Image 1 (cartoon, rainbow, N blue to C red):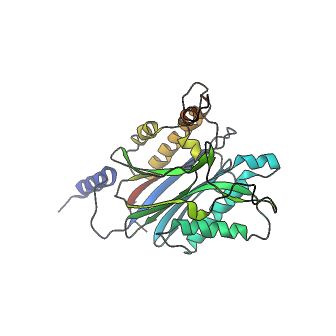
Image 2: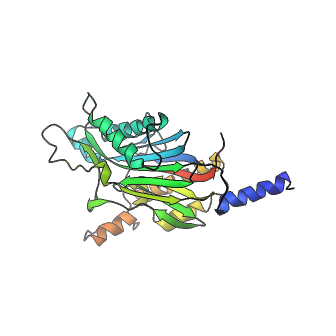
Length: 297
């Protein structure tokens, strides 16, 4: 018979080591969030889960844990439209659909589609555009289902290595796929993609897998190796530790975004497209950091 102490150590090794489990236990996600608006208001949330023009949600239902991030397109500000309203309303709507159980865990694109169509049907017009990424953990099957439209995205890290990641969707340089609602008469002028155009994926996860879901403000400023270095500091699965690591990642990305001499992933991508660009990319940053753990009520 295992002592409590040795059993705890075995569980800890299973959780942090990513050991495969074949029993019938349900899994869940322990998730913390952190972010920064690019106007330097460090870690300050607007109403709801919003950092600048970014928005996010963390929701649970009896069958699944669901995460989402969205990045409002800042160009709308030039036309007197607050870009954060579209992304925030989209995420709030998706969150409500999950909490009401109006979704299928294996179809996150269904959540995105339903949320977007609700926005289209609003009696009060809501103008704007946004990228979106939704990640669903089916607790019983131990499978992750994702959809990603645009250049937000996710990484799954196991044993210190990236084992799954989203594919970025760009029409051309710095012009990601996006959901949009245009003013009457401008539908053919404003870039708008269908939710069904989102890249979808499904894969099994293990206890201890780390899932990082974020807007492009993170990925444009921090390459994988820097993110992995920060994730090595995550020593256990309690919420405070996850929150501290999420903040550390967001803070580092925020600092790099304003370094004019740093060769950021965004600057490298720009150079690959024939542009002479150097430095970080000032942007809103949203980070959701999750660990796959055994489900407890």
